[in-house]
Image (cartoon, rainbow, N blue to C red; front, top):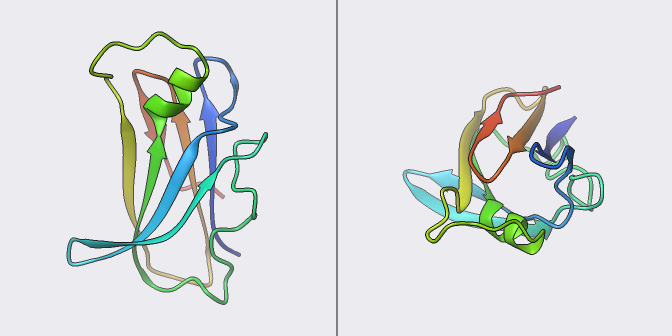
Length: 117
């Protein structure tokens, strides 16, 4: 099924529509930008899967979520410097026949993630 992500704003109880996200491949500490996108009204990539099964490769990846930019755009008063600026999640793909879903639950002060389905 490939690779996907979904972001939920736990402060407002909504999808994080409008959040900027970057996807990288990583190799020995070097990151290569694959794509940058803005989450749609459902808090997902507007193009659907980030990689489909045929293009997802075994290896390491990074998703970078612009948390501070998103909450500032929503009018949330943030301290300077922000507690969370960009949340970077590094993860590995071992079996390309499986689906890798990387959700982010986020507020200006906390986040959690897991491998979803």
